[in-house]
Image (cartoon, rainbow, N blue to C red; front, side, top):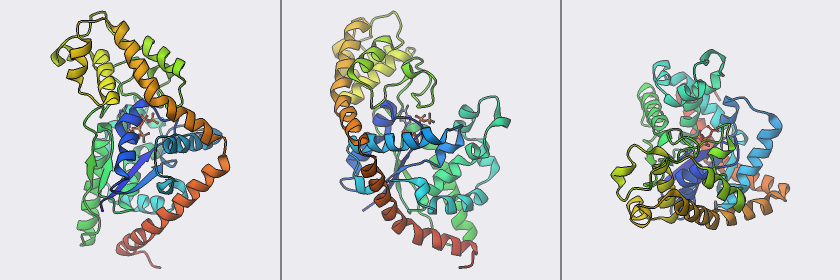
Length: 329
Ligand code: AQP
């Protein structure tokens, strides 16, 4: 059985992009893969954070994932499993500055004021490589925004194997969902939907109420033209394309099929139908999330059990990696 590793940062409540680009596929994959689902709280320190908010968001994210159908025995938080940090350090020493310099996510997140960002943000992809390879996972379901990081993880694995003279780490294959690999912001169709976007209107989160979902879709940026009947008509219209892609992904239909139904109409009826569809799919997750959040003790015990299982897989692998690099035990 292939081993799958997936992570999500508890930097906020998971949004529709996380759901369509990642979480929904995780729930499907766990039926026939050996899965580990990780709340990557160590990655959350790479941008400014508050300890209290991190605690709340880690619990909130855990509740959302369980509500979205993730198997509780496979869920844990990264900092509870020291293998991530141990292998992450080795990879900091294997990875090359030239490789990290090419990472577009660092450039996007650091913006112009690079000097003021944490070293952690810069080496984030090394820790991400360790997250996966500490388990010898070979399949990683991600949105297409993470493909560059996975290529880097393979470069690190290859260099480690080459330098140590042994085929120790396996090759990683990304699993990118065919639809909605990248959901864009509702306020700007050229930016990806993100937890850290300062505008709450830019994203639908998995705890939004029906009214909040409808309001955000109603206010979503569009243009003044009616929807086209063919896909080619969306080429220069990022906001319209985003809404059609979301509709298609949520309803599990093709964008062309959606345009055959709504092409020629204004955005009013389309947005109403999209809001209704989203409420129907997401409201049960929101209800279950708030139920789970009422029992913090239970959530903590789920994470502890998941961490124990994760340790039992990763510790022997990371012990061997440490021995290969020459650490004494
Ligand atoms: N907009 C998106 N469309 C499709 N997939 C997405 N993912 C994230 N945003 C989108 C996928 O969700 C998984 C978990 O992502 P993450 O939380 O670890 O990191 P991120 O990609 O940095 O997500 P955010 O929302 O933008 O978080 P912040 O703002 O904290 O950086 C990944 O598989 C990712 O591909």
